[in-house]
Length: 276
Image (cartoon, rainbow, N blue to C red; front, side, top):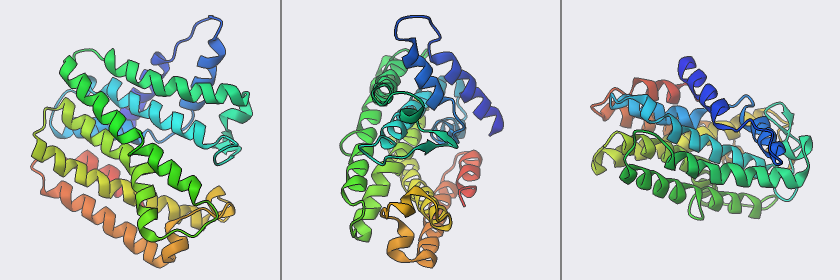
């Protein structure tokens, strides 16, 4: 896992321009957010899926990177004063605190659009696969995906929300990019539709479990912004013990799906097992 994270980090550094053009501050701001200490979980999932099919992970590296750009853009916008209004991200000032707010907005926009450019420029991938990757990315990050989850999150801040809406929010705001990562790996590996559906079902359970465990971690950290802002979380609705049980059940479902597949899913199992 460490080797793959280094691979991802090095490629991220290569892909952000280092030039002296008039808009160089844009690329500086992008580097500030993109090269901070993230888990790189989404690109790791792409590489792990391709590895499960015994394919060359070099084919998947740039598409995997595109997901990290989408994730980072969403965090930049999520932190803005008009949204979650968070002053810190990953142990340092949020982008709109380190740079002007208008630049934070434009940096998020840049990373969003650049993600698609990276896919179109990916080497050794057929154009038909690039179209499938772009289709998957728009499906999972758009109005029926990541953005839908953000709408629910902000709409219900400080309000009561039922468990079904909470699951919808977590599925879209968090898990959908996990689904995108797994589907990316399946597309690159030429997986059949039936196999892809099984892998995507794994990703759904794994992504939801990840967010539930994150909610539980925030609950334990009383200073978390989600707690101080009275945001909708699993422990707030279910209670801490039921939330833990639900998260563990989702994790088990995800691992059971992996174990039922006739592929080398050991790396995916490792990632899933380490979420708690």
